[in-house]
Image 1 (cartoon, one colour):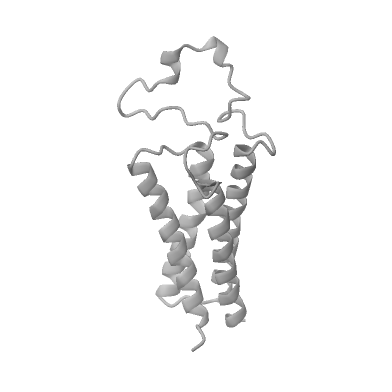
Image 2 (cartoon, one colour; image 1 turned 45 degrees about the vertical axis):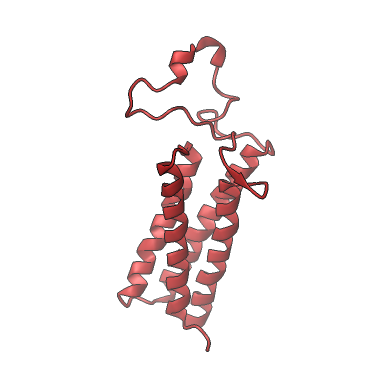
Length: 158
């Protein structure tokens, strides 16, 4: 039995939901996200909203195109983040060790001043990895698979 276009779209949207829920779960157990980690979440949220549009019956091929674009965006950000973590290229100076002048800062400057303020999280440091791939790398790979699902939905709808 072949999947219909809206089923591909719903599956892709659910994939974004799972990845976003996973990111929040890691955050809940103590892995604070860096700035680029947060950037990767926005396209997933957009893909989830697009999935809701598909669910209520708006199954135009443009919705599937936007879903593929959202998944490609988060995959691209994940790849960019992976490159920063692996020193393939430099990241934004605001969240990497290269742009901060730590020599002028005390240890207390780097620590949170209250329980509500998160600790400084550097974008060029891997906080968790599995099979030598970081969370950013896994997001890039899984999101690339979601692009394929969205494109299948687009092709079936066209």
